Length: 373
Image (cartoon, rainbow, N blue to C red; front, side, top):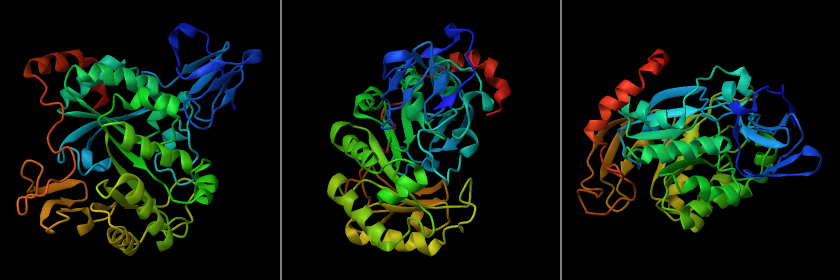
């Protein structure tokens, strides 16, 4: 556990959920499968859940360290209101220890090591509206660890008809799963590999809890979700592993869950690995489609693997370039050629925000204009 400087004003902290007291002032955090047992003045593995005076607090609450307007395809989500913009935010810390983290500057930082802005949950939806975004994304670092903030933002967002999206590593306990995901409209789950060896050595976690999260999403929620597999040369790009991953998705989740194979670039503690060759993604996509998955994509490269085709007649439905939608030929969510219904959320599930709230959003968020989003 990490020693923290004791804060002087406990009234400025937000008490966490998903914990229980233990003897000698320790607390047990059961938000994620790490089940951290945290001593006085210490934090859990994630850095932002701290024990002060025998209570667990969340330092990430109302303290985003990253704010940005993204295309929704960057999450990546290819079957959730494509071509729209999404208000994206993250805090500090993470509950995994990935050596290849591409947002390590915030995910591997303590709360006091990043520049954050105090934004209460009720203001986040107004900022999204101000910038014309129909959706919010909890992303960049692992949003599970600031689940209290996520829930309160989601509750505020529903008033304005905004969608909410988790971009997650899927490392969460069942005790917390429904508390968070019952408020979520869509998710992208990062299935980082399909071996316990990779998860144990390269992410400092375990594979099975992530697979369980995917099954909970499929069987117990209405959340639209897609999966991303970042392919790292020599570590998780073996064709046999790719086949096993695709076969598991087919058997446990079905053929219609979109699977994204994305290219790695050297970062953080994996500077010695080369960029992923495009051929590796082409091969992975070919394997997954041969297994029987209908929607398999390639990301972080320019390729035809970014497009959506009808799995029945092969008609081009959506043509993309990187994260840009260039053409969308879907007709009410169906193939215009053969009429096959294409799984996804092709129109805003929550409708349009009433125009009368837009002036309120602009006026109420003037204090954040310095953020230059």
